[in-house]
Length: 322
Image (cartoon, rainbow, N blue to C red; front, side, top):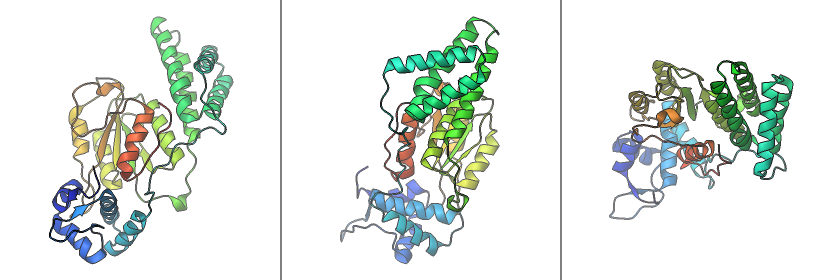
């Protein structure tokens, strides 16, 4: 969308408020278009839109309108915007050759088959330290998990304990990657809600996304595996997220009606209501499209799309594939 291209009516429909509400915010608090041309309809730039979106989000949380307007204007005056930064890379990390990743995957798989938990954990931790979270996930963890899964399928139940041990240590490593957030600096609302759809127990990819967002300090609520529809809807209404990520590993758990229901879940007070952008993650969604939903295929792409939504609003430089 180009700057100075959105009319008041179009913006009102986009935000779920009335044109009168936008005009009132402009008249009382100065939250109008920065550029005005006499005799023409007012046009809103992306920065103008970001300010009124923030106004709506804050008022929906119960912040008094005058205070919300001051905060929204202050944040909107930052030339860089409230953008989502890039995930941290490992100190001094350089792009590793494919052979390096092959050796690391083989070493990790052998340790897992031996059920050598200390070595598995050391190898996973080392991969993150050397390559950064995103590359470690994409180039080491995921391929090794797939290889162990194939071995289990080919050998019956002989290697189920190997897959469980490896999955547990991958999960443990991902949880360690996200730094603790200072409670005093913690924002009052979640930028994202992350949940597996009902019946879906495969949550590792969602944990990887949560860890990457945690490195960025992006506020989120992670609900994990098999979350009931009512619980996701309640979380959206209570936290007012910009994005809801629904993970489905298998076609049997993906539900287009569910995705549409969450996309239509509204939050906020009357006159300033919003609804989330739905992101559908996982191979289970490889079917009919859900209108307006995001469909990333990698962790990197997911972070890029989240960055655009949270800050069309943020400028984000996504990390390596995932």
